[in-house]
Length: 109
Image (cartoon, rainbow, N blue to C red):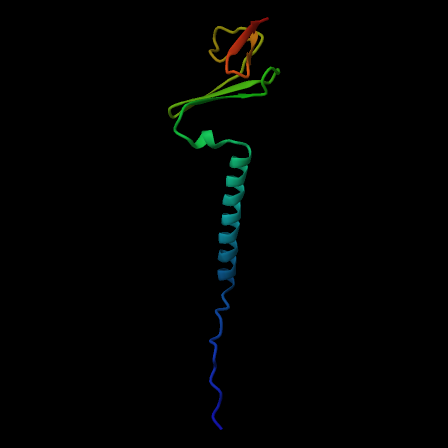
């Protein structure tokens, strides 16, 4: 009788190969989560080359206006007090509404 040959070679038992595979899986999952969050919250304009303006918490005390012009991103926080030394201060002077037909109506306070 002939001895049976091994049909399968023994697998590599290096424990670090398992760790590197788990790292690759974690990176794919993190990238997928990031893409899902960007599309869910409609933040795709952050990655575009176009200029944009975002208003966070409109009409509230902690309102912020974020403007992107080219490669420069500016953050503007309005405040009640006017300070001549700070260019990023301002105050609320009215409310603007956009109608269904696209017209914008400004109402001063």
